[in-house]
Length: 218
Image (tube, rainbow, N blue to C red; front, side):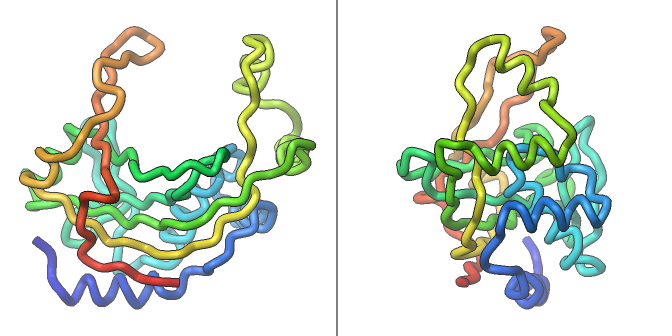
């Protein structure tokens, strides 16, 4: 599907990733670099994408061409997505499933290039304590409550604990082909967008049943 040379080159670049991501420092780094997603609550995923956008070119072309409205994060021999995944949630429960990209987009990528890839950062997330100090800091940095937060307050929905740190344990290079995708689960199948239009299902990856092409330890 892809060359051994590319796997080796990706491994060398990914080994240079920082192993400890402090939330405040990461958000300020994204903001000061002009990265547009620094205001996002789920900063870990966007910070990993920021790191990949910074460290992987020119080996990886960023971004990848679109399939309909869906865009992969990068391209090198095949389309790639970059994702970060804490392996435990805020309650300390194991999280072994990862939501990947749009099922139809992955199918089109496999049809065109023979496969699609996932660069997956896995590690331990630390959540802020009940005083929500990190949450308050981030809101003040952004200039106040977002519309999403205002709507949540009106709904009287509970606020999720924010991740304040991420310790990278490993990065997996995962390759998907037609056979593998057929054996995977799906997420948001049958869901609809806010305008009522159907939302495409996404591939749900079970980390206990998928074999990585390469695992880089930290």
